[in-house]
Image (cartoon, rainbow, N blue to C red; front, side, top):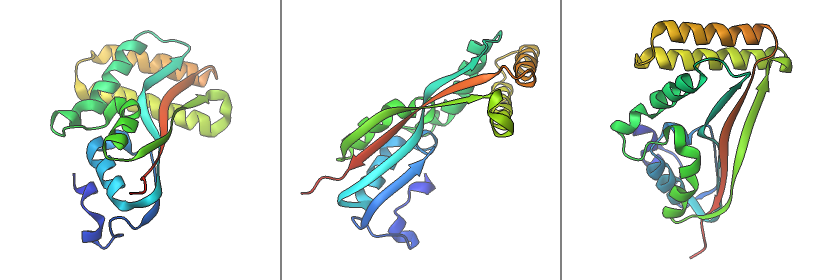
Length: 185
């Protein structure tokens, strides 16, 4: 993955010179072992690595709509497609695997805890935009995979949009946040 090339070669910081590495909503998009190894190499002894919002396999809409289970499963399969060509890819279960990957890379895990989004249509325009975007992402993922019938995707999308327009839709999305430290020799 080009994103994890040694940063020093690209003009970035030298290995062992960084006090703090912060990344948000990143781990599910990269190979976890390579992310962990790169973070462990960059951070100085005593330095910290804080990787937050690593998706952890749960997106739950309420109220329940017909086909929620099938649509979310398709969403996860879509997220996990790069794992077929990239060993250790984060994907839909990155959150629960991130702490162990950082520990394997030699970092001490200081905290590994759930971080849950709860967004409701009643949260105002911003909440409605987040919900509308998530509905679109899930539907597009299912369409892209092609294993959920188009009529079912359209029916699910209509039900979710009706709940959003009616002000009753909410979603719970589970992530994990991990804080690790490179030990002193």
